Amino acid sequence: MTAESPESPPLVNAHAATAAPVRIGNASGFYGDRFSAVREMLEGGPLDVLTGDYLAELTMLILGRARLKDPSAGYATTFLRQMEECLGLALDRGVAVVANAGGLNPASLAAGLRELAERLGLQARIAHVEGDDLLSRAAGLGPADGAYGPPLTANAYLGAWGIAECLKNGAQIVVTGRVTDASLVIGPAAAHFGWSRDDWDALAGATVAGHVLECGAQATGGNFSFFEEIPLEVIYNVKAPGAAHFGFPIAEVHRDGSSVITKHPGTGGAVTTETVTAQLLYEIAGPRYAGPDVTTRFDTIVLTDVGPDRVRVAGVRGEPPPTTIKVCLNHLGGFRNEVTFVLTGLDIEAKAGLVRRQMEQALNPRPRHLEWQLARTDHADAAGEQEASALLRCAVKDADRDVVGRAFSGAAVELALASYPGFTMTAPPGAATPYGVYVPAYVDRGDVEHVAVLPDGSRVDVAASAVTALAADPAFDPVADPVVADLAGDPGSRPGPPAGGPGLPDPPEEPALGTLVRVPLGRVAGARSGDKGGDANIGVWARTDEQWRWLVRFLTADRLRRLLPETRDHPVTRHVLPNLRAVNFVVEGLLQEGVSASTRFDPQGKALGEWLRSRVVELPEVLL
Image (cartoon, rainbow, N blue to C red; front, side, top):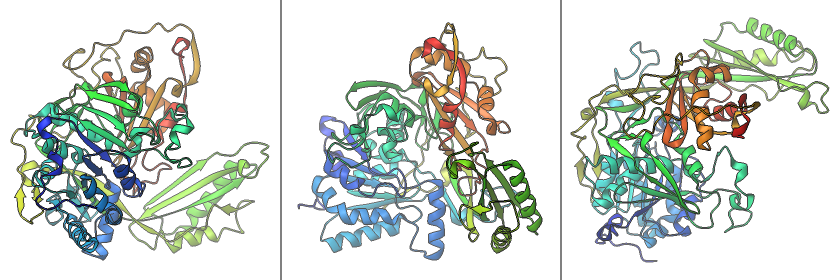
Protein backbone atom coordinates (compact mmCIF):
# COMPACT_ATOMS: atom_id res chain seq x y z
CA MET A 1 0.00 0.00 0.00
CA THR A 2 1.36 3.44 -0.91
CA ALA A 3 -0.29 6.18 1.10
CA GLU A 4 0.03 9.75 -0.13
CA SER A 5 2.87 11.76 1.42
CA PRO A 6 2.24 15.21 2.96
CA GLU A 7 4.02 16.83 0.01
CA SER A 8 1.73 15.32 -2.63
CA PRO A 9 -0.46 17.73 -4.66
CA PRO A 10 -4.10 18.23 -3.62
CA LEU A 11 -6.05 15.17 -4.71
CA VAL A 12 -9.13 17.09 -5.78
CA ASN A 13 -7.20 19.13 -8.34
CA ALA A 14 -5.63 16.13 -10.08
CA HIS A 15 -7.49 16.75 -13.35
CA ALA A 16 -7.87 20.54 -13.27
CA ALA A 17 -5.40 21.10 -16.11
CA THR A 18 -7.50 19.06 -18.50
CA ALA A 19 -10.83 20.35 -17.14
CA ALA A 20 -12.00 16.75 -16.89
CA PRO A 21 -15.11 16.22 -14.77
CA VAL A 22 -14.63 15.45 -11.11
CA ARG A 23 -16.20 12.13 -10.05
CA ILE A 24 -17.89 12.54 -6.68
CA GLY A 25 -19.54 9.55 -5.03
CA ASN A 26 -21.73 9.13 -1.97
CA ALA A 27 -21.55 6.39 0.66
CA SER A 28 -24.04 7.52 3.30
CA GLY A 29 -27.45 9.17 3.26
CA PHE A 30 -28.01 9.18 7.04
CA TYR A 31 -26.43 8.13 10.33
CA GLY A 32 -27.10 4.39 10.21
CA ASP A 33 -26.87 3.83 6.47
CA ARG A 34 -25.17 0.71 5.09
CA PHE A 35 -21.79 0.39 6.81
CA SER A 36 -20.16 -1.45 3.91
CA ALA A 37 -20.96 1.30 1.39
CA VAL A 38 -17.65 3.13 1.93
CA ARG A 39 -15.64 0.06 0.94
CA GLU A 40 -18.07 -0.75 -1.90
CA MET A 41 -17.65 2.72 -3.38
CA LEU A 42 -13.86 2.76 -3.04
CA GLU A 43 -13.46 -0.68 -4.61
CA GLY A 44 -16.25 -0.40 -7.19
CA GLY A 45 -14.59 1.93 -9.69
CA PRO A 46 -12.75 5.23 -10.18
CA LEU A 47 -13.59 8.19 -7.91
CA ASP A 48 -11.95 11.52 -7.14
CA VAL A 49 -13.99 12.27 -4.01
CA LEU A 50 -16.18 10.18 -1.72
CA THR A 51 -18.78 11.99 0.38
CA GLY A 52 -20.92 10.90 3.30
CA ASP A 53 -24.00 12.62 4.72
CA TYR A 54 -24.58 11.62 8.35
CA LEU A 55 -26.65 14.51 9.69
CA ALA A 56 -30.33 15.32 9.95
CA GLU A 57 -32.36 17.40 12.38
CA LEU A 58 -33.08 14.29 14.48
CA THR A 59 -29.40 13.26 14.33
CA MET A 60 -28.35 16.60 15.80
CA LEU A 61 -30.66 15.91 18.75
CA ILE A 62 -29.18 12.43 19.24
CA LEU A 63 -25.65 13.82 19.11
CA GLY A 64 -26.63 16.61 21.50
CA ARG A 65 -27.77 14.11 24.11
CA ALA A 66 -24.51 12.20 23.65
CA ARG A 67 -22.52 15.39 24.21
CA LEU A 68 -24.41 16.02 27.46
CA LYS A 69 -22.95 12.78 28.82
CA ASP A 70 -19.47 13.26 27.34
CA PRO A 71 -18.21 16.68 26.12
CA SER A 72 -15.75 14.94 23.79
CA ALA A 73 -18.60 13.11 22.01
CA GLY A 74 -21.13 14.51 19.56
CA TYR A 75 -19.87 13.11 16.26
CA ALA A 76 -20.87 10.09 14.14
CA THR A 77 -18.74 7.28 15.56
CA THR A 78 -19.71 5.05 12.62
CA PHE A 79 -17.55 7.16 10.31
CA LEU A 80 -14.50 6.60 12.49
CA ARG A 81 -15.06 2.83 12.35
CA GLN A 82 -15.53 3.00 8.57
CA MET A 83 -12.25 4.86 8.23
CA GLU A 84 -10.50 2.28 10.39
CA GLU A 85 -11.47 -0.24 7.73
CA CYS A 86 -11.01 1.95 4.65
CA LEU A 87 -8.63 4.87 5.30
CA GLY A 88 -5.67 3.05 3.76
CA LEU A 89 -7.78 2.07 0.77
CA ALA A 90 -8.87 5.68 0.18
CA LEU A 91 -5.30 6.97 0.41
CA ASP A 92 -3.96 4.22 -1.82
CA ARG A 93 -6.55 5.00 -4.51
CA GLY A 94 -6.10 8.77 -4.26
CA VAL A 95 -9.70 9.43 -3.23
CA ALA A 96 -10.42 12.45 -1.04
CA VAL A 97 -13.11 11.85 1.61
CA VAL A 98 -15.52 14.62 2.65
CA ALA A 99 -18.16 13.96 5.32
CA ASN A 100 -20.30 15.96 7.72
CA ALA A 101 -19.81 13.23 10.34
CA GLY A 102 -18.25 15.79 12.68
CA GLY A 103 -21.75 16.68 13.85
CA LEU A 104 -21.43 18.80 16.98
CA ASN A 105 -17.72 18.13 17.44
CA PRO A 106 -15.74 18.08 14.18
CA ALA A 107 -12.48 18.92 15.97
CA SER A 108 -12.77 15.79 18.13
CA LEU A 109 -13.51 13.63 15.09
CA ALA A 110 -10.50 15.09 13.26
CA ALA A 111 -8.31 14.35 16.28
CA GLY A 112 -9.67 10.80 16.39
CA LEU A 113 -8.84 10.35 12.72
CA ARG A 114 -5.27 11.50 13.27
CA GLU A 115 -4.86 9.03 16.13
CA LEU A 116 -6.34 6.32 13.90
CA ALA A 117 -3.95 7.09 11.04
CA GLU A 118 -0.97 7.01 13.38
CA ARG A 119 -2.08 3.68 14.85
CA LEU A 120 -2.47 2.25 11.32
CA GLY A 121 0.92 3.60 10.25
CA LEU A 122 -0.60 5.87 7.60
CA GLN A 123 0.21 9.46 6.68
CA ALA A 124 -3.02 11.35 6.06
CA ARG A 125 -3.70 15.06 5.72
CA ILE A 126 -6.81 15.65 7.82
CA ALA A 127 -8.74 18.92 8.05
CA HIS A 128 -12.03 20.03 9.49
CA VAL A 129 -14.56 22.84 9.21
CA GLU A 130 -16.12 24.53 12.22
CA GLY A 131 -18.05 27.64 13.22
CA ASP A 132 -21.57 26.33 12.79
CA ASP A 133 -22.12 25.80 16.54
CA LEU A 134 -24.05 28.82 17.88
CA LEU A 135 -25.09 27.28 21.19
CA SER A 136 -23.10 29.75 23.28
CA ARG A 137 -25.08 32.64 21.81
CA ALA A 138 -28.38 30.95 21.01
CA ALA A 139 -30.43 32.97 23.51
CA GLY A 140 -33.23 34.72 21.67
CA LEU A 141 -32.99 32.59 18.52
CA GLY A 142 -35.87 30.30 19.51
CA PRO A 143 -39.55 30.94 20.22
CA ALA A 144 -40.20 34.33 21.80
CA ASP A 145 -42.27 32.78 24.59
CA GLY A 146 -39.39 30.55 25.70
CA ALA A 147 -41.76 27.58 25.73
CA TYR A 148 -39.00 25.00 25.50
CA GLY A 149 -36.23 26.49 27.60
CA PRO A 150 -32.67 26.86 26.30
CA PRO A 151 -31.76 24.81 23.21
CA LEU A 152 -29.71 21.63 23.43
CA THR A 153 -28.13 22.30 20.03
CA ALA A 154 -27.97 25.38 17.79
CA ASN A 155 -26.18 24.97 14.48
CA ALA A 156 -26.06 27.18 11.42
CA TYR A 157 -26.06 25.58 7.97
CA LEU A 158 -22.64 26.54 6.63
CA GLY A 159 -21.82 26.48 2.95
CA ALA A 160 -19.16 24.86 0.80
CA TRP A 161 -16.24 27.28 0.87
CA GLY A 162 -14.66 25.94 4.06
CA ILE A 163 -14.54 22.49 2.48
CA ALA A 164 -13.06 23.97 -0.70
CA GLU A 165 -10.39 25.78 1.32
CA CYS A 166 -9.35 22.56 3.05
CA LEU A 167 -9.11 20.66 -0.23
CA LYS A 168 -7.19 23.43 -1.99
CA ASN A 169 -4.66 23.23 0.83
CA GLY A 170 -4.03 19.54 0.33
CA ALA A 171 -6.49 17.86 2.70
CA GLN A 172 -7.20 14.22 1.94
CA ILE A 173 -9.91 13.85 4.61
CA VAL A 174 -12.29 16.72 5.47
CA VAL A 175 -14.87 16.43 8.23
CA THR A 176 -17.42 19.11 9.00
CA GLY A 177 -20.18 19.98 11.40
CA ARG A 178 -23.54 21.20 10.16
CA VAL A 179 -23.11 22.23 6.55
CA THR A 180 -25.85 21.99 3.95
CA ASP A 181 -26.04 18.49 2.52
CA ALA A 182 -25.22 19.73 -0.98
CA SER A 183 -22.07 21.49 0.29
CA LEU A 184 -20.35 18.09 0.41
CA VAL A 185 -20.44 18.12 -3.41
CA ILE A 186 -20.23 21.88 -4.08
CA GLY A 187 -17.01 22.24 -2.06
CA PRO A 188 -14.98 19.60 -3.95
CA ALA A 189 -16.29 20.82 -7.31
CA ALA A 190 -15.48 24.46 -6.49
CA ALA A 191 -11.97 23.48 -5.41
CA HIS A 192 -11.41 21.30 -8.46
CA PHE A 193 -12.47 23.93 -11.02
CA GLY A 194 -11.44 27.06 -9.13
CA TRP A 195 -14.93 28.57 -9.22
CA SER A 196 -15.39 32.09 -7.88
CA ARG A 197 -17.93 33.02 -5.25
CA ASP A 198 -20.27 34.50 -7.87
CA ASP A 199 -20.24 31.63 -10.40
CA TRP A 200 -23.94 31.32 -9.64
CA ASP A 201 -24.90 28.90 -12.42
CA ALA A 202 -22.00 26.53 -11.77
CA LEU A 203 -22.64 26.59 -8.02
CA ALA A 204 -26.35 25.97 -8.63
CA GLY A 205 -25.59 23.03 -10.89
CA ALA A 206 -23.36 21.50 -8.22
CA THR A 207 -26.11 22.12 -5.67
CA VAL A 208 -28.48 20.03 -7.74
CA ALA A 209 -25.89 17.26 -8.05
CA GLY A 210 -25.36 17.41 -4.29
CA HIS A 211 -29.09 17.24 -3.63
CA VAL A 212 -29.33 14.14 -5.80
CA LEU A 213 -26.41 12.44 -4.04
CA GLU A 214 -27.18 13.43 -0.44
CA CYS A 215 -29.66 10.62 0.26
CA GLY A 216 -27.54 7.82 -1.12
CA ALA A 217 -29.44 4.98 -2.74
CA GLN A 218 -32.63 7.01 -3.12
CA ALA A 219 -31.08 8.24 -6.39
CA THR A 220 -30.50 4.70 -7.67
CA GLY A 221 -34.01 3.34 -7.14
CA GLY A 222 -34.34 3.19 -3.37
CA ASN A 223 -37.82 4.17 -2.11
CA PHE A 224 -38.90 4.63 -5.74
CA SER A 225 -42.64 4.66 -6.52
CA PHE A 226 -42.30 2.36 -9.54
CA PHE A 227 -39.83 -0.01 -7.87
CA GLU A 228 -41.58 -3.01 -9.44
CA GLU A 229 -40.30 -1.89 -12.84
CA ILE A 230 -36.69 -2.42 -11.76
CA PRO A 231 -35.95 -6.12 -12.44
CA LEU A 232 -35.07 -8.14 -9.37
CA GLU A 233 -31.78 -9.22 -10.91
CA VAL A 234 -30.90 -5.51 -11.16
CA ILE A 235 -31.86 -4.71 -7.57
CA TYR A 236 -29.95 -7.76 -6.38
CA ASN A 237 -26.42 -6.63 -7.08
CA VAL A 238 -25.24 -8.73 -10.04
CA LYS A 239 -21.63 -8.40 -8.86
CA ALA A 240 -22.53 -10.29 -5.70
CA PRO A 241 -25.59 -12.48 -6.29
CA GLY A 242 -27.82 -12.58 -3.25
CA ALA A 243 -26.73 -9.13 -2.00
CA ALA A 244 -30.15 -7.50 -1.89
CA HIS A 245 -29.30 -3.82 -1.96
CA PHE A 246 -29.03 -0.85 -4.26
CA GLY A 247 -25.76 0.75 -5.28
CA PHE A 248 -24.83 4.31 -4.28
CA PRO A 249 -24.80 7.26 -6.70
CA ILE A 250 -21.98 9.18 -8.38
CA ALA A 251 -22.04 12.66 -9.90
CA GLU A 252 -19.59 13.45 -12.71
CA VAL A 253 -19.52 17.23 -12.25
CA HIS A 254 -18.30 19.38 -15.16
CA ARG A 255 -16.69 22.81 -15.16
CA ASP A 256 -19.97 24.59 -16.02
CA GLY A 257 -21.78 22.92 -13.12
CA SER A 258 -23.64 20.40 -15.27
CA SER A 259 -23.30 16.77 -14.21
CA VAL A 260 -24.03 13.20 -15.11
CA ILE A 261 -25.59 11.08 -12.37
CA THR A 262 -24.48 7.46 -12.51
CA LYS A 263 -23.27 4.56 -10.35
CA HIS A 264 -20.52 1.97 -10.41
CA PRO A 265 -21.05 -0.73 -13.08
CA GLY A 266 -22.69 -3.89 -11.82
CA THR A 267 -24.09 -2.40 -8.62
CA GLY A 268 -27.76 -2.79 -7.75
CA GLY A 269 -30.59 -0.47 -8.68
CA ALA A 270 -30.93 1.88 -11.63
CA VAL A 271 -30.30 5.52 -12.49
CA THR A 272 -33.03 7.00 -14.71
CA THR A 273 -34.59 10.42 -15.19
CA GLU A 274 -37.38 9.28 -12.88
CA THR A 275 -35.19 8.04 -10.03
CA VAL A 276 -33.33 11.37 -10.25
CA THR A 277 -36.61 13.32 -10.41
CA ALA A 278 -37.87 11.53 -7.31
CA GLN A 279 -34.78 12.57 -5.34
CA LEU A 280 -34.88 16.13 -6.67
CA LEU A 281 -38.40 16.50 -5.25
CA TYR A 282 -37.38 15.18 -1.84
CA GLU A 283 -37.70 17.62 1.07
CA ILE A 284 -37.69 20.84 -0.93
CA ALA A 285 -40.19 23.68 -0.99
CA GLY A 286 -40.51 26.07 -3.93
CA PRO A 287 -38.54 26.43 -7.15
CA ARG A 288 -36.06 28.79 -5.47
CA TYR A 289 -33.89 26.50 -3.32
CA ALA A 290 -32.03 28.85 -1.01
CA GLY A 291 -28.60 27.91 0.34
CA PRO A 292 -25.76 29.79 2.03
CA ASP A 293 -23.72 30.00 -1.19
CA VAL A 294 -26.31 30.22 -3.96
CA THR A 295 -30.05 30.18 -4.59
CA THR A 296 -30.74 27.39 -7.05
CA ARG A 297 -33.60 27.58 -9.53
CA PHE A 298 -35.08 24.08 -9.51
CA ASP A 299 -37.49 25.19 -12.24
CA THR A 300 -34.57 25.38 -14.70
CA ILE A 301 -33.27 21.82 -14.30
CA VAL A 302 -33.19 19.76 -17.49
CA LEU A 303 -32.74 15.97 -17.21
CA THR A 304 -31.68 13.81 -20.15
CA ASP A 305 -31.01 10.08 -20.39
CA VAL A 306 -27.56 9.76 -22.01
CA GLY A 307 -26.99 6.04 -21.61
CA PRO A 308 -27.67 3.10 -19.33
CA ASP A 309 -27.59 4.36 -15.73
CA ARG A 310 -26.49 7.81 -16.90
CA VAL A 311 -28.66 10.93 -16.53
CA ARG A 312 -27.37 14.36 -17.53
CA VAL A 313 -28.36 17.33 -15.34
CA ALA A 314 -27.99 20.66 -17.14
CA GLY A 315 -29.44 24.12 -17.62
CA VAL A 316 -29.48 24.97 -13.94
CA ARG A 317 -29.64 28.68 -13.18
CA GLY A 318 -28.30 30.22 -9.98
CA GLU A 319 -28.93 33.46 -8.13
CA PRO A 320 -27.27 35.13 -5.12
CA PRO A 321 -28.05 33.55 -1.74
CA PRO A 322 -30.36 35.20 0.82
CA THR A 323 -29.01 37.59 3.43
CA THR A 324 -29.76 35.13 6.21
CA ILE A 325 -28.51 31.66 7.13
CA LYS A 326 -30.75 28.96 8.54
CA VAL A 327 -30.11 27.64 12.05
CA CYS A 328 -31.27 24.26 13.39
CA LEU A 329 -32.34 24.50 17.05
CA ASN A 330 -33.13 21.39 19.07
CA HIS A 331 -34.81 21.74 22.46
CA LEU A 332 -35.60 19.07 25.03
CA GLY A 333 -39.37 19.13 24.82
CA GLY A 334 -40.35 16.73 27.59
CA PHE A 335 -41.25 13.05 27.83
CA ARG A 336 -43.47 10.70 25.85
CA ASN A 337 -44.99 7.25 26.03
CA GLU A 338 -47.52 5.16 24.16
CA VAL A 339 -49.46 1.91 24.19
CA THR A 340 -51.37 0.06 21.47
CA PHE A 341 -54.47 -1.96 22.37
CA VAL A 342 -55.58 -4.83 20.12
CA LEU A 343 -59.34 -4.96 19.50
CA THR A 344 -60.54 -8.19 17.91
CA GLY A 345 -63.79 -9.33 16.33
CA LEU A 346 -67.14 -7.63 16.84
CA ASP A 347 -68.06 -4.20 18.26
CA ILE A 348 -64.70 -2.57 17.53
CA GLU A 349 -65.93 1.00 18.02
CA ALA A 350 -67.62 0.13 21.33
CA LYS A 351 -64.50 -1.63 22.61
CA ALA A 352 -62.40 1.38 21.67
CA GLY A 353 -64.80 3.70 23.44
CA LEU A 354 -64.71 1.65 26.63
CA VAL A 355 -60.93 1.48 27.00
CA ARG A 356 -60.60 5.14 26.07
CA ARG A 357 -63.02 6.20 28.84
CA GLN A 358 -61.28 3.95 31.34
CA MET A 359 -57.80 5.25 30.52
CA GLU A 360 -58.78 8.92 30.55
CA GLN A 361 -60.52 8.53 33.90
CA ALA A 362 -57.42 6.85 35.37
CA LEU A 363 -54.94 9.47 34.14
CA ASN A 364 -54.80 12.07 36.88
CA PRO A 365 -53.18 14.46 36.30
CA ARG A 366 -54.01 14.37 32.61
CA PRO A 367 -50.94 14.53 30.31
CA ARG A 368 -50.43 17.78 28.45
CA HIS A 369 -50.87 15.93 25.15
CA LEU A 370 -53.18 12.91 24.88
CA GLU A 371 -53.90 11.45 21.45
CA TRP A 372 -55.95 8.45 20.29
CA GLN A 373 -55.74 6.78 16.87
CA LEU A 374 -57.96 3.87 15.84
CA ALA A 375 -56.66 1.93 12.83
CA ARG A 376 -59.43 -0.25 11.38
CA THR A 377 -57.18 -3.01 10.12
CA ASP A 378 -59.88 -5.60 10.92
CA HIS A 379 -61.80 -7.62 8.33
CA ALA A 380 -65.22 -9.22 8.78
CA ASP A 381 -65.36 -13.02 8.99
CA ALA A 382 -61.56 -13.17 8.93
CA ALA A 383 -59.76 -16.49 8.59
CA GLY A 384 -56.91 -15.32 10.85
CA GLU A 385 -56.97 -13.61 14.24
CA GLN A 386 -54.68 -10.78 13.17
CA GLU A 387 -56.89 -10.03 10.18
CA ALA A 388 -59.87 -9.84 12.56
CA SER A 389 -58.19 -7.19 14.73
CA ALA A 390 -57.99 -3.39 14.85
CA LEU A 391 -55.33 -1.32 16.62
CA LEU A 392 -56.07 1.47 19.10
CA ARG A 393 -53.02 3.62 19.85
CA CYS A 394 -52.75 6.01 22.75
CA ALA A 395 -49.82 8.49 22.75
CA VAL A 396 -49.04 10.91 25.56
CA LYS A 397 -46.52 13.72 26.12
CA ASP A 398 -45.79 15.88 29.15
CA ALA A 399 -43.00 17.96 30.67
CA ASP A 400 -43.17 15.77 33.80
CA ARG A 401 -41.62 12.32 33.31
CA ASP A 402 -43.77 10.81 36.09
CA VAL A 403 -47.06 11.86 34.45
CA VAL A 404 -46.35 9.77 31.32
CA GLY A 405 -44.19 7.15 33.03
CA ARG A 406 -45.39 4.68 35.63
CA ALA A 407 -48.72 6.49 36.05
CA PHE A 408 -49.53 5.93 32.37
CA SER A 409 -48.10 2.42 32.09
CA GLY A 410 -49.82 1.30 35.28
CA ALA A 411 -53.18 2.62 34.13
CA ALA A 412 -52.97 0.51 30.96
CA VAL A 413 -51.78 -2.67 32.66
CA GLU A 414 -54.42 -2.48 35.39
CA LEU A 415 -57.17 -2.79 32.77
CA ALA A 416 -56.00 -6.26 31.70
CA LEU A 417 -58.82 -8.13 33.46
CA ALA A 418 -61.33 -5.30 33.69
CA SER A 419 -62.00 -3.90 30.25
CA TYR A 420 -63.20 -5.07 26.84
CA PRO A 421 -63.42 -8.77 25.89
CA GLY A 422 -60.23 -10.12 24.34
CA PHE A 423 -58.08 -7.41 26.00
CA THR A 424 -54.47 -7.51 24.84
CA MET A 425 -51.72 -5.10 23.77
CA THR A 426 -49.03 -5.31 21.10
CA ALA A 427 -46.40 -4.97 23.87
CA PRO A 428 -46.34 -3.97 27.52
CA PRO A 429 -46.09 -0.17 27.90
CA GLY A 430 -42.60 0.99 28.74
CA ALA A 431 -40.98 3.83 30.61
CA ALA A 432 -41.28 7.44 29.52
CA THR A 433 -38.62 8.57 27.04
CA PRO A 434 -37.37 12.11 26.35
CA TYR A 435 -38.18 13.81 23.07
CA GLY A 436 -36.84 16.86 21.31
CA VAL A 437 -38.45 19.76 19.52
CA TYR A 438 -36.97 21.13 16.30
CA VAL A 439 -37.24 24.88 15.71
CA PRO A 440 -35.76 26.65 12.66
CA ALA A 441 -34.27 30.12 13.05
CA TYR A 442 -32.43 32.57 10.82
CA VAL A 443 -29.42 34.79 11.52
CA ASP A 444 -27.59 37.35 9.47
CA ARG A 445 -24.91 35.57 7.45
CA GLY A 446 -22.28 38.00 8.70
CA ASP A 447 -22.91 36.88 12.28
CA VAL A 448 -21.77 33.30 11.64
CA GLU A 449 -18.13 32.26 11.80
CA HIS A 450 -16.96 29.82 9.16
CA VAL A 451 -13.49 28.44 9.76
CA ALA A 452 -11.40 25.96 7.79
CA VAL A 453 -8.85 24.24 10.04
CA LEU A 454 -6.16 23.03 7.63
CA PRO A 455 -4.05 19.86 7.91
CA ASP A 456 -1.16 21.84 9.44
CA GLY A 457 -3.47 23.25 12.11
CA SER A 458 -3.66 26.76 10.70
CA ARG A 459 -7.05 28.43 10.68
CA VAL A 460 -8.60 30.25 7.73
CA ASP A 461 -11.66 32.45 8.19
CA VAL A 462 -14.12 31.95 5.34
CA ALA A 463 -15.92 35.21 4.59
CA ALA A 464 -19.64 35.28 3.90
CA SER A 465 -20.75 35.98 0.35
CA ALA A 466 -20.52 39.69 -0.42
CA VAL A 467 -23.46 39.51 -2.83
CA THR A 468 -26.88 38.44 -1.59
CA ALA A 469 -30.44 38.45 -2.86
CA LEU A 470 -32.54 41.53 -2.25
CA ALA A 471 -35.16 39.54 -0.37
CA ALA A 472 -34.17 38.77 3.22
CA ASP A 473 -37.32 36.77 3.90
CA PRO A 474 -36.27 33.08 4.10
CA ALA A 475 -39.66 32.08 2.70
CA PHE A 476 -39.33 34.40 -0.32
CA ASP A 477 -40.38 32.53 -3.44
CA PRO A 478 -42.17 34.49 -6.15
CA VAL A 479 -42.00 31.61 -8.63
CA ALA A 480 -44.78 29.55 -7.05
CA ASP A 481 -47.43 28.10 -9.39
CA PRO A 482 -46.72 30.11 -12.55
CA VAL A 483 -48.57 27.87 -15.02
CA VAL A 484 -51.94 27.59 -13.31
CA ALA A 485 -52.99 31.21 -12.88
CA ASP A 486 -56.26 30.23 -14.54
CA LEU A 487 -57.15 27.97 -11.59
CA ALA A 488 -59.26 30.48 -9.68
CA GLY A 489 -59.98 29.52 -6.13
CA ASP A 490 -56.93 27.30 -5.54
CA PRO A 491 -55.89 28.44 -2.04
CA GLY A 492 -52.45 26.95 -2.45
CA SER A 493 -51.46 28.96 -5.52
CA ARG A 494 -49.47 32.08 -4.77
CA PRO A 495 -49.36 34.82 -7.41
CA GLY A 496 -46.28 34.52 -9.56
CA PRO A 497 -44.68 36.01 -12.65
CA PRO A 498 -46.38 35.58 -16.00
CA ALA A 499 -46.31 32.07 -17.41
CA GLY A 500 -43.45 31.45 -19.76
CA GLY A 501 -41.12 33.69 -17.75
CA PRO A 502 -37.38 33.09 -17.41
CA GLY A 503 -36.61 29.39 -17.52
CA LEU A 504 -40.28 28.39 -17.58
CA PRO A 505 -42.10 26.65 -20.45
CA ASP A 506 -45.47 27.90 -21.61
CA PRO A 507 -48.52 26.55 -19.77
CA PRO A 508 -49.55 23.12 -21.03
CA GLU A 509 -52.67 22.90 -23.11
CA GLU A 510 -55.80 21.43 -21.56
CA PRO A 511 -55.91 17.72 -22.49
CA ALA A 512 -58.99 16.24 -24.13
CA LEU A 513 -60.68 14.38 -21.30
CA GLY A 514 -62.73 11.76 -23.11
CA THR A 515 -63.93 8.81 -21.05
CA LEU A 516 -63.13 9.06 -17.35
CA VAL A 517 -62.18 6.01 -15.28
CA ARG A 518 -61.69 5.57 -11.54
CA VAL A 519 -58.19 4.32 -10.76
CA PRO A 520 -55.51 5.02 -8.16
CA LEU A 521 -53.59 8.23 -8.85
CA GLY A 522 -50.39 6.19 -8.74
CA ARG A 523 -51.25 4.64 -12.10
CA VAL A 524 -50.02 7.85 -13.75
CA ALA A 525 -47.97 9.62 -11.07
CA GLY A 526 -44.99 8.94 -8.84
CA ALA A 527 -44.40 10.60 -5.48
CA ARG A 528 -41.70 11.17 -2.88
CA SER A 529 -42.43 12.69 0.53
CA GLY A 530 -40.57 13.57 3.70
CA ASP A 531 -40.09 16.01 6.55
CA LYS A 532 -38.73 19.51 6.91
CA GLY A 533 -39.00 20.00 10.65
CA GLY A 534 -42.70 20.08 11.47
CA ASP A 535 -43.73 20.53 7.83
CA ALA A 536 -44.35 17.73 5.37
CA ASN A 537 -43.22 17.82 1.76
CA ILE A 538 -44.98 15.83 -0.98
CA GLY A 539 -43.51 15.89 -4.49
CA VAL A 540 -45.58 14.37 -7.31
CA TRP A 541 -44.45 13.87 -10.90
CA ALA A 542 -46.15 12.72 -14.09
CA ARG A 543 -44.52 10.21 -16.41
CA THR A 544 -45.56 11.64 -19.80
CA ASP A 545 -46.35 15.08 -21.21
CA GLU A 546 -50.02 14.14 -21.61
CA GLN A 547 -50.27 12.99 -18.00
CA TRP A 548 -48.53 16.20 -16.89
CA ARG A 549 -51.07 18.38 -18.70
CA TRP A 550 -53.82 16.64 -16.74
CA LEU A 551 -51.98 16.44 -13.41
CA VAL A 552 -51.02 20.11 -13.19
CA ARG A 553 -54.66 21.16 -13.47
CA PHE A 554 -56.13 18.32 -11.43
CA LEU A 555 -53.88 18.12 -8.39
CA THR A 556 -54.33 21.51 -6.73
CA ALA A 557 -53.75 22.26 -3.06
CA ASP A 558 -57.49 22.07 -2.44
CA ARG A 559 -57.66 18.67 -4.18
CA LEU A 560 -54.76 17.42 -2.04
CA ARG A 561 -56.70 18.35 1.10
CA ARG A 562 -59.69 16.33 -0.13
CA LEU A 563 -57.58 13.31 -1.05
CA LEU A 564 -55.57 13.42 2.20
CA PRO A 565 -58.10 14.49 4.86
CA GLU A 566 -55.41 14.66 7.56
CA THR A 567 -54.05 17.78 5.80
CA ARG A 568 -57.35 19.71 5.85
CA ASP A 569 -56.60 21.76 8.95
CA HIS A 570 -53.12 22.77 7.78
CA PRO A 571 -51.89 25.44 5.36
CA VAL A 572 -50.94 23.80 2.06
CA THR A 573 -48.82 25.55 -0.57
CA ARG A 574 -48.34 24.11 -4.03
CA HIS A 575 -45.29 24.80 -6.21
CA VAL A 576 -45.02 23.87 -9.89
CA LEU A 577 -41.84 22.55 -11.53
CA PRO A 578 -42.71 22.21 -15.23
CA ASN A 579 -39.26 21.03 -16.34
CA LEU A 580 -39.64 18.02 -14.05
CA ARG A 581 -43.36 17.57 -14.88
CA ALA A 582 -43.90 17.89 -11.15
CA VAL A 583 -45.84 19.66 -8.42
CA ASN A 584 -44.57 19.98 -4.87
CA PHE A 585 -46.74 20.51 -1.79
CA VAL A 586 -45.66 21.88 1.56
CA VAL A 587 -48.08 21.00 4.38
CA GLU A 588 -47.28 23.23 7.32
CA GLY A 589 -47.33 21.76 10.82
CA LEU A 590 -48.58 18.31 9.82
CA LEU A 591 -45.64 16.67 11.61
CA GLN A 592 -46.22 18.76 14.74
CA GLU A 593 -42.94 19.82 16.39
CA GLY A 594 -40.65 17.64 14.27
CA VAL A 595 -39.91 13.93 14.04
CA SER A 596 -38.79 13.39 17.64
CA ALA A 597 -41.91 15.05 19.05
CA SER A 598 -44.45 13.90 16.47
CA THR A 599 -47.08 11.41 17.62
CA ARG A 600 -48.28 10.73 14.07
CA PHE A 601 -48.36 7.17 12.79
CA ASP A 602 -45.79 8.29 10.16
CA PRO A 603 -43.82 10.95 12.07
CA GLN A 604 -41.47 11.82 9.20
CA GLY A 605 -44.12 11.88 6.48
CA LYS A 606 -42.18 9.30 4.47
CA ALA A 607 -45.30 7.44 3.29
CA LEU A 608 -47.59 10.41 2.58
CA GLY A 609 -46.73 10.24 -1.11
CA GLU A 610 -47.65 6.56 -1.35
CA TRP A 611 -50.91 7.20 0.51
CA LEU A 612 -51.70 9.91 -2.05
CA ARG A 613 -50.87 7.56 -4.94
CA SER A 614 -53.26 4.96 -3.53
CA ARG A 615 -56.26 7.32 -3.57
CA VAL A 616 -58.78 6.60 -6.32
CA VAL A 617 -59.45 9.51 -8.71
CA GLU A 618 -61.24 10.07 -12.00
CA LEU A 619 -58.84 10.51 -14.86
CA PRO A 620 -59.06 10.30 -18.65
CA GLU A 621 -58.83 6.70 -19.79
CA VAL A 622 -56.56 7.77 -22.65
CA LEU A 623 -53.84 8.63 -20.10
CA LEU A 624 -53.56 4.96 -19.14
